[in-house]
Each structure stands twice: as structure tokens, then as C-alpha cells.
Amino acid sequence: MFENIDKDKLPKHVAIIMDGNGRWAKLRGLPRIYGHREGAKAVERTIRIAKNIGIKYLTVFAFSTENWQRPKEEVEAIMSLLVEYINTKVPELIKENIKLRFMGRKENLPEMILETMKEGEEKTKNCDSMDFIVAINYSGKAEIIDAVNKIITSGKPDITEEDFKNFLYLPDVPEPDLLIRTSGEQRISNFMLWQLAYTELYFTPVLWPDFDEEEFLKAIYDYQSRERRFGKVVS
Ligand code: IPE
Ligand code: IPE
Ligand code: MG
Image (cartoon, rainbow, N blue to C red):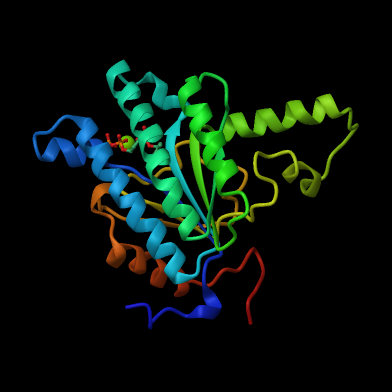
């Protein structure tokens, strides 16, 4: 199945806005949390495929700062699911040599999830086949504001684009080459605003729990068919 992939044109960093869990559940007459549970299985599949394809950085949007406005039961269920998911997946990530990382604001996150995150990062810190980055309590605008405040504190009188990057949450991570958003919504929803400046965008109507190898490969092929110009003229 992977033989049609052009190894010389692989996206190094794929970012995903995993959307449509709620609608997936609703279609089946189930509470929304069932959709999130099924979505967790899609994350597992996606990690495996990304690693097999040879992607170096996979980032997933798991919980936005705006998602706190959802009903309390849903927020609590998502937080518990995240803790459970991270705890059970860390041994597999170690086995697969995948480094687990997080981005987002630490403030407001329950202690139990902060501890789980720290432990997961610590246990996988020497893994180097792929970085798996989970955005939790993340907002692109907040990331930029946090960077600006760090710059003010540092006392720098002025700043270049190159410097600015170094104040973002994960300065060593290259900007995403490909952004996938599932569920048919065609918006960025405050995700990686700085880093997406030249990212190729791919939208699919498939709901996140249904995202599988075939869908992932479709996105990769589509990406490989595009010409990235970065404002230049390509001869
Ligand atoms: C994405 O699915 C998961 C999170 C935002 C946590 P949604 O929960 O947004 O699903 P829909 O968009 O309501 O279908
Ligand atoms: C974006 O999805 C956030 C995550 C996937 C975590 P939402 O479902 O929250 O976005 P909107 O509300 O449709 O823009
Ligand atoms: Mg949604």
C-alpha cells in the first residue's frame, strides 16, 4: 500500500485537527464521549501509519483552550480519557521508539493530567524514530502571546522572525508541511497560527473516528501532487 509514496517528497511534519468525534457518536445515537473513545483508536492507527510512512513529526490537536466551554461532563470525560490513553500507550511508544511531547498552556490543567504528561515525556525522552506531539489546552493566539511575553521578560529590544521562533512552545520542531482536518470543517480553529504560514492544507469529510490508513494515504498522495512555491516562481 505504501509503494506509491514518493520517499523524496515526504512531509516531514504532519499536523492533524482531529474533528468529528461528536458527530460520529450522534450518528449512532450514542453520547459524545463514545466518539472521543473511538477517536482515541484512530490516533493509535494514525501514529502507526505515520511511523511506517517515515514521517518525523506528527502533531495532533486534542483539546483547545476554547474546548473548556463545552459541558463540564464532556470536558471531564476528555481529560480522563487523555490520562488513560497516555498511561496505557507510553510502553508501546517506548517499544516503537517514539518520543511523546506536548504543547499548550499548563495553567488550568488538572494535576493528574500534568503528572501523566510529565511522566510520558520523561519516559520517552530518548526515543528518536518520530516525535508524537499532542496539543492539549492549546491555542495558536495564546502561543504567540506567551512568546511575546517571554520576549518582553528577556529584555530584547527588537526581534527577528528567526528569534521569534525560538520563543514558541517547541522551537526545535519544523513547521508542518501538511495539515489535515477531518469532518468537513474548513477552518484552522486557532491551531498553530504562526507555524501554518506555508503549510499545505487538506480537508476531508471523513469523521475522525473513521480516519484510517486509506484516508491518511489519500492525504499524503494529494500533498505529493502539489507544487510548493513559497512565493517563488518555479521553472
Ligand atoms: C474533536 O471532535 C475532538 C475535540 C475537539 C476534543 P468534536 O468533539 O469537536 O466533534 P464534533 O465536531 O462535535 O463532531
Ligand atoms: C478544534 O475542533 C479543536 C480540536 C480538534 C481539539 P473544534 O471542534 O473545537 O473546532 P470548532 O469549534 O469546530 O471550530
Ligand atoms: Mg468539532
